[in-house]
Image (cartoon, rainbow, N blue to C red; front, side, top):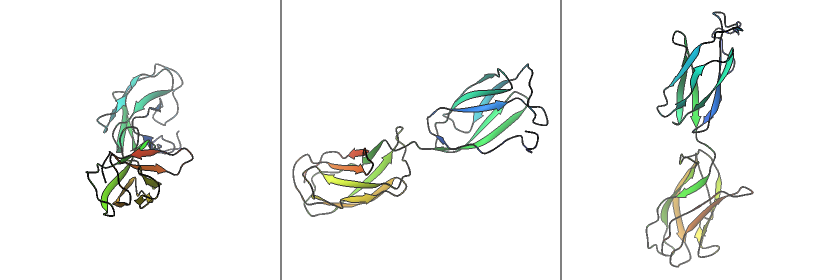
Length: 193
């Protein structure tokens, strides 16, 4: 609009990695007033995200949506050009929601009552760490009350620490589950205690 020094209103929302979103390009005059009659320009997009999937093409009217997909986490620039005029915005590309919990590889065998280290990561559908602070319940497949701690809290999607097995057996696993109504889970590799 004409009352904005750069013709933009608002700020771009954070975008989830690898999820499509629309960017609307407006054809405007030098005072940022809409151009209500064609011909409308052909536009192309560019980005600092080397994996971005960018659309472009002829605008069908004065405001035209284009489908974009960003594939690199972090702050990215998204630019548009009609060949003579350019504009850009800054977009924060963030991980998607947690899809699973990943437990680091556990070597075998382990000893009863001897602590050992593990790391748990919250992962989105594209294997990025999702920076959540969820509490996870931990269990050992040998039975209840056979693993301490029984609960841990992720910090920015990661927990690293020691656990201790108070049960023994072959081909055991550590199971992690968050506290949602329908828990998201993760299971370690098999190991012997």
